[in-house]
Amino acid sequence: MQRRAAAIYVAFFLVVGAASYSLIATAEEPTIGFENPEHALEQGDEFTIDGQQYTATTVNTEVEEESSDHGGTTVTVTRTAAFAWTNQSALYTETWDNGSTVTYESDEWDVVIPNASDPTSATLRESIDRAGILANDTNADNETVTRDGQEFVIITENNSSTLVPASEYFPTPETQQLSESQTLDYNGNQTRVDVATDAVTLSWNAPRENTVEVGDQANVTLSGQTYLAFFQTNDTVVLTQDFESYRAQNDDIDQFTEQKNGLWGVTILSGLCIVFLIGLAFLPSRY
Picture 1 (cartoon, rainbow, N blue to C red):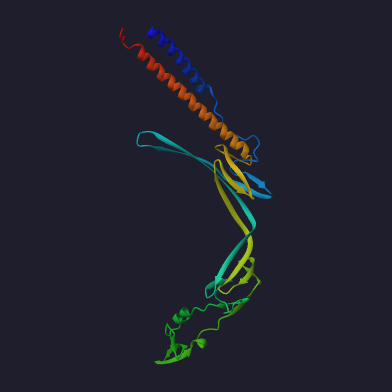
Picture 2 (picture 1 turned 180 degrees about the vertical axis):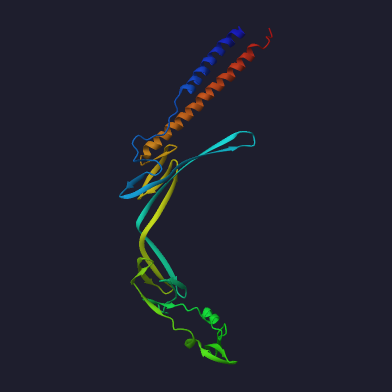
């Protein structure tokens, strides 16, 4: 009787375990997909958002296999996409600090801002290479000297040395005036001038190349709009704003995983019960 009852229970758990396992084996796992995404792109494709043209410069899938110390292999899949566009009127700025030396029209200039609380102009003074001039003059010492607060150059001719005022020896530097709100040609760009107490700021508009990179199932902002980037295949990425559908599909996947784990629990528990019942059925009877 003991073994007959055990056989009945074993059959019951066998049916339950087989049924739960068959559900696991035949269940179709839900996946994420979008029927009508705003953009489906391969590498090199061009698309437009709010009048701005973009190019999918990269749509790439990399698979990396790494062997573990225990003999197994870990596979890592990385998917990335990059989008490039040109801002035709990007703002550029450059700052010239007071007292600094800058390059303008292929020459070196010293920036001089008057000592005022609200200056409206600045001066570009030609930067004179004094050390180079002295080095090229065989009659002049390589360094100037100061006498009674005045700077001199020592000139030696016929074993006789003469002090020549530096203001007379060196050429008079050229100057250019920069005025507040003035527009000048700087590196081929129409450039605006702003003068502050410590610096001159140049600003202009010109084209600028931009690139943004995004991973699989990550958000990217283009032309002020946020899109979800999803790799439909290894070579195709879609951009969609259907975030509600994306969340719903992820919920379905989570629910499927939870139910599948539950069925695995039933299957494993049924197997354990079968083993336990068979073991009990063959225990020797005390009577």
